[in-house]
Image (cartoon, rainbow, N blue to C red):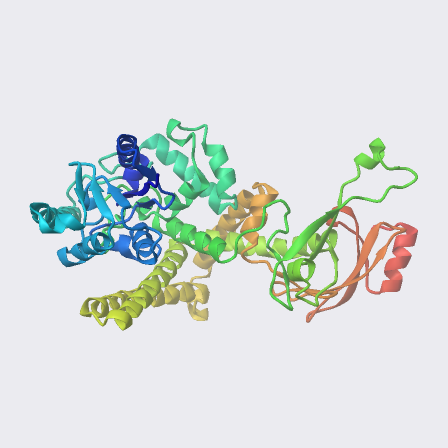
Length: 553
């Protein structure tokens, strides 16, 4: 006995529906129907469109479930006598009448029945010439009109909320974890989010942060790292409602200030453009290949056994692994000629030399008045507006709609205003940094007091920074320090020194390198364990003599 195939088609338009009983209800009803109709067998060609709109004909686009079914019909894989089973006719779609009628006619003319479980109706080729055809047409039209009216009501309600928000009135909208329903900060949750932001800006990854937060609040038991990124990019942090139109400020209570939010967005973009390597090593992300522009990768190697520390002995197990760095492209793809292997200790020595100066500069920056932070926030805001303007320009080029052209002009006005403010702040800071000589002379006592106060602020910032764990401090300095490698040459634009890797002294367990800058003569250094300088001299011969004599310097 030949059985006809029953092809289930289920659809829901909202992601929330997929989490509930909508899909289970549709599939459950299909299997109940199948049990009552043994002349049909379940087909493997059944389709589900999840989170797909039927009103916009999205389910008819290439690759979507309904489009796949129609393709099967056209190719004969779904044959006359088979049935498409849906919960109701509007599951096929709520598009305009002509589009939906075309879908129905295509199925029926191919000899494929449409079964609607909601009303136990079967539509086939014969139905076209019966009163059922009028019922089917009415249902198709009703489904489209319902979706159309619903969409208009939702749009009107949403715009009403936007109007209230601009007036400063309370509105009912979904709020993020750290806000109460009225838009004020929930103290405990707010402290947790602030702590997460501080860790992220200190260099910790989202997985590490999520792991640390999961035990702090009942709602965070299953906290996912991707949720943290949504928190960090949400303008509700600074009180802004980023809705479907232009963002509206001061809708919520701010959790952080705008300069901190700007720094947070900058860090999110930085990690997106250049994914941070694992924060396992202090030098992670600081060492780069000058030839191909790729990061250097740290490698671990087991130490060689010796007579005093044979393999497997307690003394051998206490030996630290040997760390080396190579160009990632050379190491993994053989796609770069920069083949020199650099000892971790030597690069760590270079890092510590430049870190001292970088640390002072960072402290000076932190000690500046609030204008410097405001300037950074404005620069980030300008970057965002430029991106929005570019998107509007692309939309206008594609559609030629006046609305997108108006958006381009509106964004440009905001960019112009921000550029004026950036110019004003920049000039203000430069004026303060380059005081007129006569003015300084006239008010020398006052100037001395200001300089002393500034020195104290810088010293305070240095003390705060040096109390940070080394990995957090390294992450902060990573924005300033970049060690470039070209074979046996290393350089940092920060201190303008050029370093050369010379050789390894097995006898003295150290590496020999040279350093030179435009302002200094060449020096030679012996770098031992932990990146410590064990000897230095103005010639290689003198350095070797010092090592032989066991001198410190």
